[in-house]
Length: 272
Image 1 (cartoon, one colour):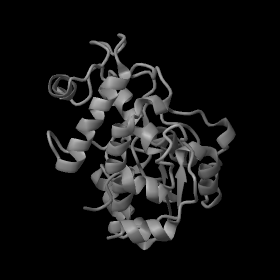
Image 2 (cartoon, one colour):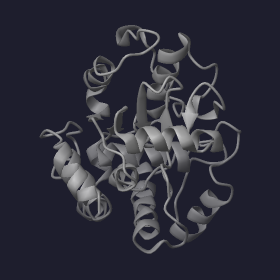
Image 3 (cartoon, rainbow, N blue to C red):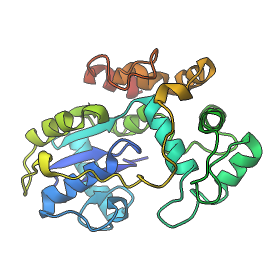
């Protein structure tokens, strides 16, 4: 399997396991800047040079060597399951993507037909019942993850713990896992733990939210989208995420963690 979703600076100062919808655009740009003293001009996900990525064949050997050697600082970033799955819905299902098209071709048409989801019209900007449609999307997300029907689960709504685990199972070890909700604090700890060719001042780094503006604005507080059944579905899908990364399942309104991440526990439970 190797190290899917893993990026590393060309200077090999740090390894990052990408988790979609968890500040990955900003983190990628910080890594790029730390090596080159400038940001990548465009979406960092499109960069074909300046950063080792597992998706590029020439990066396999250096990433494998560094990850399995466990001498290079390795980290990842996680997010509250409630806000992450909501963000996936508005960005990937309701939104028009960078290429001007719907995400994954006919996926949205299929959801409209099979699950009765509304997405705000052709351009994603029309009024629609966001709460009803989101709850139907949750049924679809659960079906993909639990039964792999009507398709394989997508990386943007599959469990964070699943992404995090592949790095461990193939011989890597994390030095730090931090929360999107405490981004500056966590990213600073990573930067304090590594030596980079160019210094990074987090206070002056812009946020690179590449998905912003793709879809309609969320019209209600987070907790309004989750009734008792929705919470049950979220727990079924993301139970390990709540437990390992210390998020509050009982209260969708609380996006902040309620405990400290135990790296030993994460490695033990995700290393099977």
